[in-house]
Length: 404
Ligand code: SOE
Image (cartoon, rainbow, N blue to C red; front, side, top):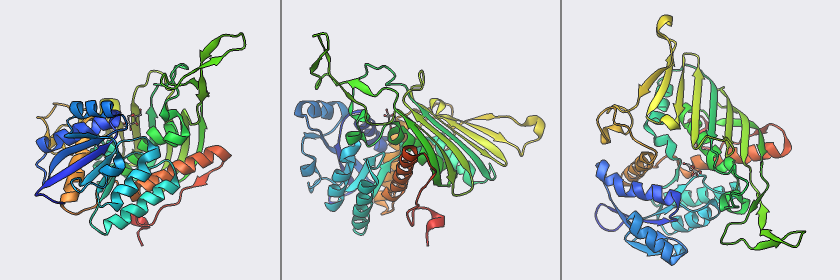
């Protein structure tokens, strides 16, 4: 990395995740005392006008339209991939080969094969001190990080149940168009990879256990949708009229699965885009022999804790307000009680990545950890396809107990 203490970032993509990541790159140095100064050097997108407007709005020095050129530039140290899943692998492999650190949005890839190529590229680049990280940002919500700390401190005892849902409802209208997230060739899967991946990663992170076998079903409730305005022609109807052309939805609208985990816990997972009324409803409940914890993204500054070690007359789900300076990340923000939001998890993600780069450490989740999530997603899809329990192979070295 040339220059002193500067990390020059190039980002590919400028939609929702591009905006969320940009906010994090803008704020991290202003909230945390970081060993490197982030430079928002360039943002990349295919449409010159749109990416130029995004550069102005999101705070990037330069707007470019060719990611292949961006990853080769000597004045770029890190590539942040905020594109649909069908380009994660090619961009990450090229950037790592060019010696750039990589932050890649979740899920890692659209297939196991692509994820394997990314893991191999990260391993090769790692030998040269280059790091790669996958953007499972919910690990960095302070309440979720506190949940992990309490579980690892043994406050719940033996973990028996994990109950995880991620509920959205943005496509319940049959007239919602056939966007890229609803097409397998672009998104890899539907609710399963988009939001199911989050609860797979987060439950494994919080409990320290990993999924070893799954039994699943998926459903696509609406199988044909109007083509998006920019691509919709008109189709002739049988009575001689015309209607907006439609196309097939090729991904799941909902994925539900049972799981067994490495430490003996049993789990239920539900990821759906048809939970009418639920906008971004991620909720995880962990039941153990000594207590329970509940994290609800809609109340992300809080954690519910049931502690059986208290006198029975005093037992109940208590609400921990996760805004004390000793809570994860919170010393950087406001006094106790002054809450934070969804976007802060991305700033925490950047903080941890910058620290890892400066100290030549591997940030988590690594591509290997994200690859294991990809294996879970693949097993869920295969289980749903053939209606059987499917084992999930565990890559060597990803989890402590699997290390030789
Ligand atoms: C889906 O709409 C989505 O944008 C996910 O892709 C993100 O990962 C999640 O944080 C919010 O919802």
